[in-house]
Amino acid sequence: MRLIDADVLKPKILEYVKALERIKYCYGYDTFGKYYNGKKSAYLNAANLIDEAPTVKERKYGLWLRNPLAGRPTVRCSCCRTVFCENSEKFAYCPYCGAKMNGEPE
Picture 1 (cartoon, rainbow, N blue to C red):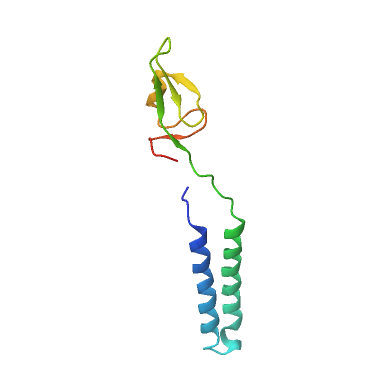
Picture 2 (cartoon, one colour; picture 1 turned 180 degrees about the horizontal axis):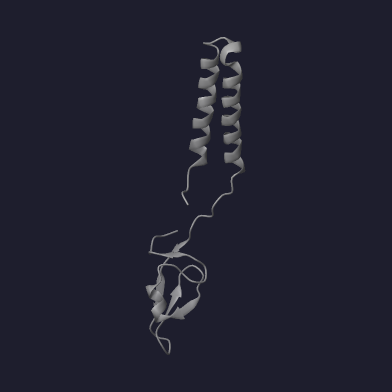
């Protein structure tokens, strides 16, 4: 999956629509009018699909917090506070909440 910036993409598509309007009047309407109207409709439909596209939640970031004072060593997720055995520290993601464990602040 690739995340895109819809706020940048939609204006670029609408620029093509404006360019098509300018090009269409260079030729006679009978010659290429239907062709350019079809392209314009396709670009406008694509721009509308961007608005209707589902959004992705931003990923949480956290780090493993060690608790050496417990009966046996444990680690805790800094996001959801769930306690795991010490071997969980090897995971790149929290198994419970899905936070990426690279230590970057949220």
